Image (tube, each protein chain N blue to C red):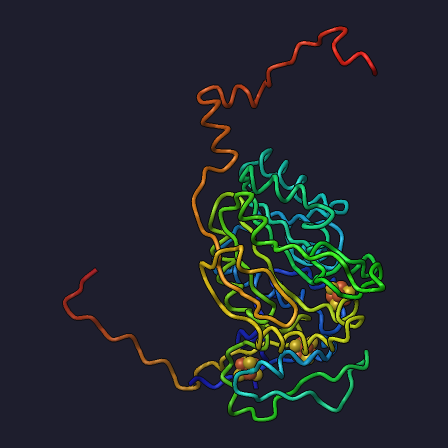
Length: 87
Length: 299
Ligand code: SF4
Ligand code: SF4
Ligand code: SF4
């Protein structure tokens, strides 16, 4: 499984809890802190388990969170050469 | 450390929205915004040309969707999204016309238009967000409000039974009919993508929470409670007969793709009827001769 993470735009969040409830790996939690409108935005609690599936982003009615797969840290292996295949 | 933008991390949905208008007017726990994610992902998946996409909506909370999507949009009077969209799709056949509106607008006040656009098989994709009430206008009972529900116009609970929308549009002749709930984000995306690729009259009902004006009066908890309820009560039955999918309080919500068939659309029928003269008729429609003294004589 690719490791992933989320971006939360806290000021857009309305604290509905959809993302927390439907995250398949249950790694989100609503914070005790408030945003300017008085809602509790979510944060990652068990970041290592986030797969970056973006289901939280699909559920969020306010476009306040999305998940992404972390870009590979390993350098990408060069494409295998294909002997005998001349352009 | 590089910033998120530098490593190319951003929410693709934002590229399709008028972000200057976000946050939306929708209440916390409203499900309409969730359906927008599925819709935008369907647009991405189908490589829809945004220059040719037009959103049309009527009045209501769901009618605001078009205004948030970064494409041409017409916000019609209450219930009249379909007639406007019909004219648009026939007048400019290049356009990809999507009607995105609510159950009160499309099925209740505009119900007759819905029936006839389905019957004519006009090239329209209709997305009906069903929150089971006229929400924005004050929580009045709609044709989709479940029997016995409390609303601002049914203080003793609604006496009338609600309508089974998929059965109505199926009977009227729609070529694609599906129902999902706001819980089914992925299935909804797939359905929207399939429907975007098809011609004719396509209809998708999405059942969504309305914590403010429907659930509160009926002690049904918040938006999340409704979403969990959809998760528990939904049963996917693709191809189910639409006469079997009426929603009854407390019983299974049957979701899925119910109808996917081929039938000549209105434009194709018109073109085949007019044949080679089609362009001529479009450029210079035959004039009806004005006849004096005709009429019933009473007026
Ligand atoms: S990206 Fe997926 S795993 Fe990560 S928080 Fe969001 S829903 Fe959970
Ligand atoms: S789904 Fe969106 S609005 Fe709801 S709690 Fe999560 S981030 Fe906030
Ligand atoms: S009134 Fe209901 S449908 Fe309208 S925005 Fe609020 S929750 Fe959504």
